[in-house]
Image 1: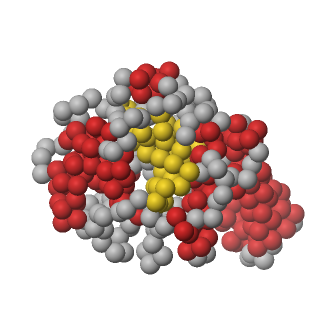
Image 2: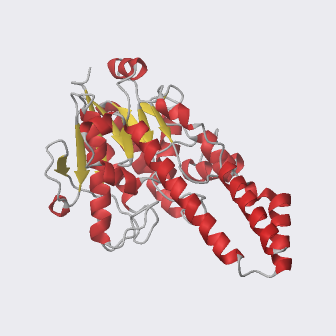
Length: 349
């Protein structure tokens, strides 16, 4: 089955455009390095499962990795994307759809670069590949709490010019045969004019605003599986989000995990040993537990240091405020409050 399955990533580079998302590189060179190493981490974790990976780009001359597991191929990009637009490079996924429409002897899956493979291929995906069923990632449950279903329906109808059920699909995971990608390419390309016409009126600017309406239209004609529901892929943010997020334990059982806020860590992971990559989740948790502990200690020291200069009234008000509002406190901050209370008792004697 793995001989038929092939993963792809997109790294479109344009130094005059702000294409970095959920990461703040110092310059364009560092941006290239981060994204390229993200791709290498993904390629290495896929290789542990015997799955090939190809990174598609417009500037192979700017890439520096010589790791044989990162197969780089330069292709042409012809879609007209307005300069300065958010997620500028992601819009060129439409050109990737066209490229994958020419891959006649494989089942192709296009993924974002900040994804990692943590488990063996599940039977569900194996059967989907065998039956040549298209697959995507429905993230409506994440989009609705953040933006509202009515707003999403309105935006989809603006782009499709037809009634919408309001489903929103993540652009980080799309798979199928050449026939599916040919249909997806044609549909997305036809939607581009209306998307660009309404680009200043929609809640989201980016590839998902094209992929979502395109998939909705295709689903009226063909069946497309949802990789999220069956644990093929999940998205995890290690920061505050506007939607209820599944517990991290859910990620452990999935085949792929998308980590949009962890690009720096994923870049670092490109240098890990195969053993560490094979146990990615365990190392990921260990790293973040250490970082959270360090941040906790720094916060404690900073507040206690500054607190020593506060007037008595402010000190009392601060504790009262913490007790009443709780500041959405988690367990680590409860300990901090106890330390502050002890400090106050000594200071105000």
